[in-house]
Image 1 (cartoon, rainbow, N blue to C red):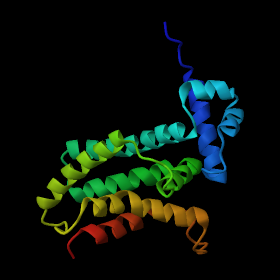
Image 2 (cartoon, one colour; image 1 turned 45 degrees about the horizontal axis):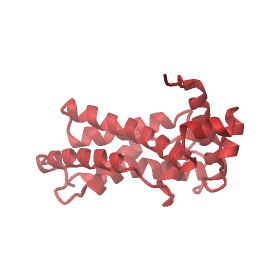
Image 3 (cartoon, rainbow, N blue to C red; image 1 turned 135 degrees about the vertical axis):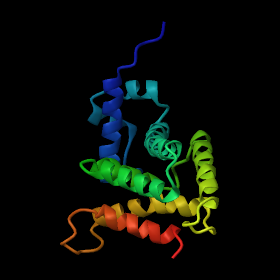
Length: 195
């Protein structure tokens, strides 16, 4: 008989990893520090994850699955490419409200080449990208010279870049306290639609 998994402990482990990584970076985060912050033993953490990389990959996959599910549901609802791009951008910016550590964590993972993406996640992203490209080819409003990378950059990369600039306070414009979702959507549309 297998042991029951204490989901509250797993959630504490994930939240501890998010907090430590968003504050200190991936390389400064250890399994021992995550376990201590989560209030579990290092052995307990190792019973569920073979190490920090597996934990990080599990969490990255969880976040990407959330975004992929949003894309998939918008495709299923028969929305056009522009509506899908807008819906995903608004979804990402909505997640960012009140979840700064989670978004910082995701931004760090997306920009750290030591993190390996699992093949199952890549396969899912490729399948969604192909569905989106079929929609692009059938649209008269969307540029026909787009690659799947262009769509993902408009939907995911662009809002993440805006959030990274906002969090890093690279641009010191104090009047912009929050990311303007309409503005980010407009910039994405400029990237993908025929002018």
